[in-house]
Length: 197
Ligand SMILES: [Fe+2]
Ligand SMILES: [Fe+2]
Image (cartoon, rainbow, N blue to C red; front, side, top):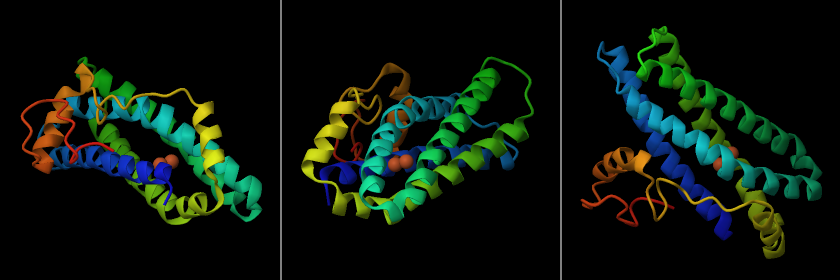
């Protein structure tokens, strides 16, 4: 397995942890409670800042590299790239709606919860499909030189939550996840192998 797809699978596992947090808040809503909208907003803010702007961008370039050589994979690569756009649009809308709720606006909460639920379901399916259908092809087809060219085309973005430095905005989220995985780290930005790619 190439280092890149290994990293991407690890990032997917991180994203799943965040999607789990959203789903847990949606369950609170359906149980009649008040979801932690600030937490949901932080998750969605991260999803639009890191996966949408960096993880998906690199995947798009790798998918292009594959379908140029394996034309049979073109339809799948196009479909996954289109899903990236759909995920980015849905994520941006959720950031807007959750931000409005946090700021006190009156929005139909059931609609926002349904949108959040649809987002997590779609994102999970998307990542499962990538791992099952296209990552093995990337490993097979792309050579180290191809990966170098892909890396050179995208400006590096450090992961602001699971990377070495946790941005202030994501400290609460990071702590929540640290307590979930039970890594025992009291400090934020612990760099623990349990959290992060
Ligand atoms: Fe993707
Ligand atoms: Fe991905």
